[in-house]
Length: 169
Image 1 (cartoon, rainbow, N blue to C red):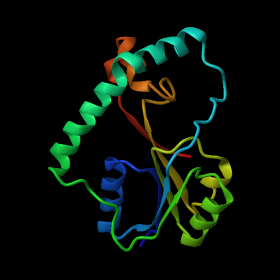
Image 2: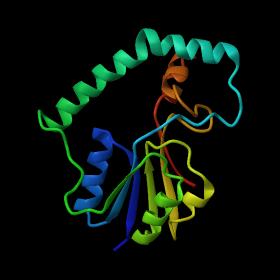
Image 3: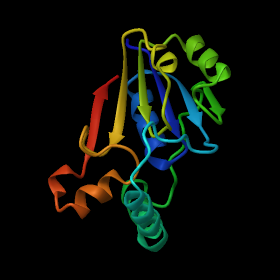
């Protein structure tokens, strides 16, 4: 049986993924990233991109995302919010790249890391999966990466590029 460590944020979709991995018998443990200040992008965004992105967030995105999440949650889970699987080792951290987080992952001895909704991870964190590290990323890579990727695909009239990418790191 393959041992999988899930690196994720605390959200309903993450709990659903954890439940599916546990039910299949693959889930060795969960590293839950609670946040903290976001990391700066590796390259500065153009001024117009930053300004438009902030305006979009203020006027539309946050509210629309919250409403969509509530509808999706109700459709998938009914009135009950899914929980992380009971009995599965779980470590909550502010940053998945810290020595504490890496020690927890190393102790799980995972063959595969599955990344679902964390901030940017360092190569040393990805290397803890003995066979592979898989990242599920909002947006169709490489054209739409980073935050607001689904927005930019739609703003550029390319709905075929609004989606998810699963890739090996």
